Image 1 (cartoon, rainbow, N blue to C red):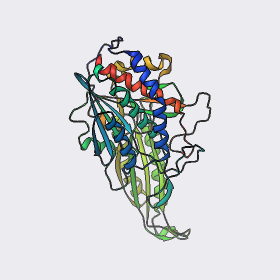
Image 2: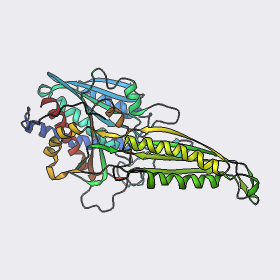
Image 3: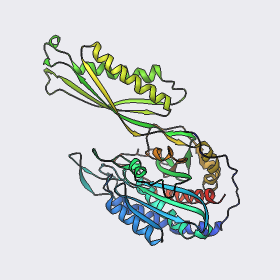
Image 4: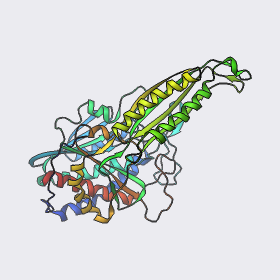
Length: 422
C-alpha cells in the first residue's frame, strides 16, 4: 500500500495540560475495568451484539457526542468535534465474542449459552475484544473532557463481527465501510490495538508494513468414482487424491515461496469423505486456510494451488475444483504513520517497553480500513508479569490482566492529541 502521508516532524511539546489529561486517565481506570467485566460476563456473537451496542451507545451519548447506531447491523460510531479545526482521526475497537465455553474461575465468568451452526456452545470473549471496547469507551470519556484542546475531529468506531459474520450474512469492517463509516468525515488516519495474552502488561509491540496476514478460506471438492473398499481398481479413490493434494500443496510453501521475505502458511483444517469402512466414496471435501503477508506471494500461492489441485486430481483419474473466500487482507501499517506516532507510544510506555516484532499469521479485518486510509495497528500487553504459561487466544482458558488496559487508554489518548495537534 502506497503511503498517503508526507513525512512529518514530531513535536514533543504538547498543546494541552498533560497533568490534567493524565489525571483523568488515572481516574477512569476503574470504570474501564468495570465495563470490561460487564462485557466479558455478557458476551454476544458476531452480528448479534445488541446489548453490547446499546451499552456503548448509552455511554457515548452521555458524553454529548454525535452517536450513530445500527451501522453494519450492530456497529456504533461517535463523533467528537474539537473546538479548533483540523484533521480527522479514527479510533477503532471490535466488540464481538466467540463460540467458546469459558473454563476460567472468575467472578465475571461468562455463563452465556447459545446455538452456533447447529451446535450448543458457550459464548466467551476469548480474544480480548471486551478489553478493546472498554478501552475505547474510556478514551472517548477522557477526550470529551478536553474538546477545547483538540484541533480537529475524532471518530470512534465500535465494530461488530471482526471474527466474521455468520454464514450467509455480511458484516465486520467490510460492511462498515460499505455503509459509509470512512465518510462524513473521512479520516486522515485510523488506529487500532489488540491486547495479547502472551505479552507483559506495560508493553507495546509494533511493526511497519505487514503485521498480520491476509486470510483466505479455501474449499476443494474432489470427485472420484465410488466402489467397494475391497476392489479399489474398479473405482477412483477421492480420499487418496485428497492426500496427494494435501501433500502437494505443502511444496508450494516449502519449495516455491520466498520465505526469506515473508512467511506463508497453507493449512487443511477439515476433511469430509465416506460413510463406511469398506466403501470408497464418490467425493471428498477439503477446507482450509492460506495466510500470506506479501501481495505477490499471495498471488503466486493461489495460482499454484489452483493449478496443482486440478492437475493432481487428473493424474489419479479424478477431478477437483477449488474456491477461495477472502476473510481479511494484509494488515499493513503505513511506514510514515508509524514513524510519526512511535514517539507517542514511547512517551506513555517508555522507550524500552515499545518493541519491534515480527509479523504474525493471524488475521484482522482492520486491514480493510487500511486499504482506504493510512492506518497503524499495534499490540498491547495483557499478561501478568512473570506468567510463563499464558493461555492462547480463542481458547476456553484465555485470560487478560485488567492492569493492561490503562496503557491502552493512555496510548490511544496520546496518539489522538499528537496526531491532531502536532
